Amino acid sequence: MSNGEDGDGKNSIQVIARAAAILRALKDESEGLSLGQIADRVSLPRSTVQRIVGALQAERLVIAASPEGGIRLGPELQSLAEAARIDLAEMIRPFLQDLSNETEETVDLAVLRNDKMIFIDQIPGKQRLRAVSSIGEAFPLTTPANGKACLALMDDNEISKVAMREWKALGVKRDPKTLLAELQKVRKSGVAFDEDEHSSGISAAGIAFKDSRGGYYGISVPTPSTRFLKKKAILVKALARLSERIAKLLQTIDPV
Image (cartoon, one colour):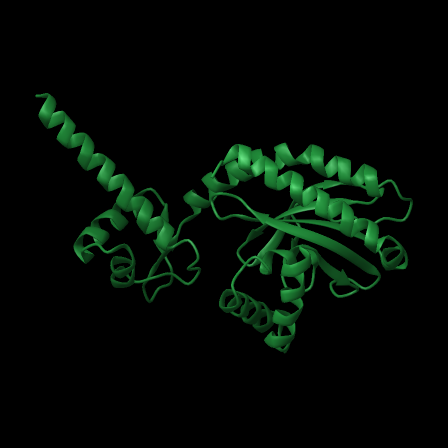
């Protein structure tokens, strides 16, 4: 009797592991993958993949990528991930408050979702003239400081794909090489800048990090451009210290 139960348990664990492998294979594929492509990536028979994908679809963990076919991550999985992000945002909030107190400027926290930076928290600055965005507001990636910081964490091929999608949607033409050269500097310094690029009269410095689930977060300090140059060096040092604090926090949450 116990042997049969042990066997069932092992089979259940195997199915969960295979389902997890399929979900991970789809993680960075916003346009989806075919069943055959998934099978190749996870080294499983196509029939096995089809059966597991069917079960995942029933729970809305994966959905059809388009009417023509393909599979991508579904809204239920995104909802579960968002619940975890909110917890992380709450843990980081005291850090954001410290940064705002130190700089006397507004501090924003945003999460990358569907090629947009979505603002999920904000500490208003103490300055009379300050930059403020609305919670839930969506910013592009290639011009704001927090978006650039997130892009710098990706490889060049992914950056080019994301940037071209954004520019096509906005109806603008830009040279990917120029963006990649700028992001190479961001990788070295750890801090990205937006100097009157996204909004005229507003400049910002920002950093980004990833959680253990692969989620991208951006933290930015926007200021009126008339004040930005005087405070730029201060913001860079403060953001560097914040980046170290967050890295230590993430190690305690998800130790390597």
